[in-house]
Length: 135
Image (cartoon, rainbow, N blue to C red):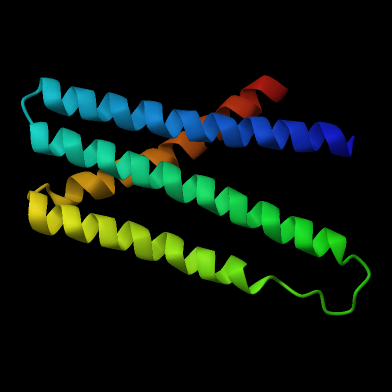
């Protein structure tokens, strides 16, 4: 039973990852076709940043689960210090990337934020997919 839950969870994670890129690229393509090139670039950059954030978050959580599983039975399990550092680095890198692109490439900030929302849309779509598939 546990093995099937792990496989289903990893399939959902993979689905969220590729849906993030597909939804972001589709939104960017529509923006470019409508003549909003800088908005299209911003949407695509935001979607890629959302995808990177998701992948790094999943990797960090996997490391946390592995560390806590290895210390099963310990009264106070130790969390690796680098796990917290990577979480901070994730947000710092996203913030720095958005700042540099916004500042030096004159891409609208709202378009990058909209692109980041591709991750949320992908998570919702993957959740609906799982609900409908389980019925």
